[in-house]
Amino acid sequence: MSTVQPAQDGRMPARIIVVDDDTLLTDSLGFLLKQEGYDVTVAGTASEALGLMRRWSPDLVLLDVGLPDLGGVEVCRRMRTDWSGPIIILTARRQDADKVIGLDSGADDYVTKPFVSTELLARVRAALRRGQTGRGGSPLGTIMLGELQIDRDARAVTVRGAPIYLSAREFDLLMLLAERPGHVVTRRFLIDTIWGPDFYGDERALDVYIHAIRKKIEPDPERPQYLQTVRGVGYRLDPSLDG
Image (cartoon, rainbow, N blue to C red; front, side, top):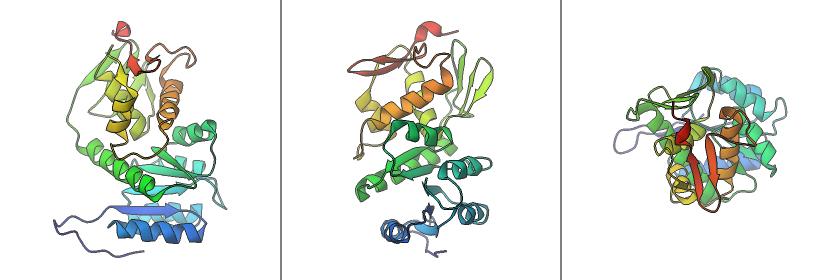
């Protein structure tokens, strides 16, 4: 486990756990993240990672889906039982279905291997910013759209009175749309706001998240009532459902 000094402003650097059984990858990732000023420790198995979670209280986890003792998706679910910080899944799989499964398990983002270091660092910075905002964001009260209720203060969503779990990124996307009911929010605005202007990844990531949100809030995700697509432009939440 690494030991680092506080930054010049007195703040301790963000602590990151890298979970992967590929030692070449963890060595290179550890070096890259430490060069950026992060405090990094590495786990090669699921059991080691879960043990670190209990002892080290990280600010972010980079989690490979292909671990030797337990699948990364199940590890993510177990981490989510008592920890709400950002989790970025590392996956070699390119099918959208696999990415959605990872997001459904509680991950906030995913990066497909092989990845460019600048993209990974951008995702890490964005995830850490969202985590800080989620802890200290300004209140906006409760938004009601039909049977969909969004509580910004609690970062909680219910549909027909039943609580719905959204990852941090899913919640932030839904809030951006809920703050502008009936207005089309462009894809570019959503990407720049959620991922940041330095995002270098595949913009189809937005579609994966929209699909994941619809699976959770829509009665029929294939015929969405709330979260509607405006083809060629972006998305909107339908204000006609406002209750």
